[in-house]
Image (cartoon, rainbow, N blue to C red):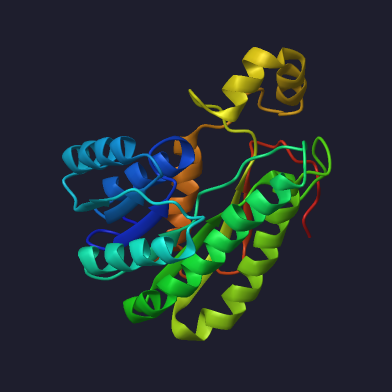
Length: 254
């Protein structure tokens, strides 16, 4: 199926590894030019070179710390200028979980929420010019069901679901769609679930047993969902929180 993304431009934050990298690879495989970034200069440069060589597309690859508001906005603007416009924005960076202190709340607010809001506000003018702009926010199933404990990560991801819905209503008339993809447990080398498997095997096995299919998802599977929602093939879809969890969550969404 041709998703209609060839020749268009995308920005993906936190895109040198894991889900973000898989999204960048997937969009590039559709012929999209991509802007990628993370805090590590060498990792960003290496990822950019690999994506460009693998898919033959233009890649803007510069380091970026989304906690630095002005530097982050400047990075986005430079990416849009370098690519020659913007059609898709995927805010993927997260501060991760943790329950040890109040610092987790500040970290998740700054990284998960403010990075998404600042990114959307900076990118919207270019997305409106696209005529078929799309924002795909990366959420989490932790936002829709209780999981582990009262973590800042869970609450801030829930805030993003609400923000995504409200923003979708606000910009729909400007030709921009906004959706959220909420992955369940996703396993990849160097990821959180690999760490949990090695350090907390009982927890890992307990979560695995709750997944009817008997396996966790992969970054590539999440990337497939993002690519669809970002594309003109999903032109009728906006304001949706699409849960991609292999049946992990048990709620009924009416």
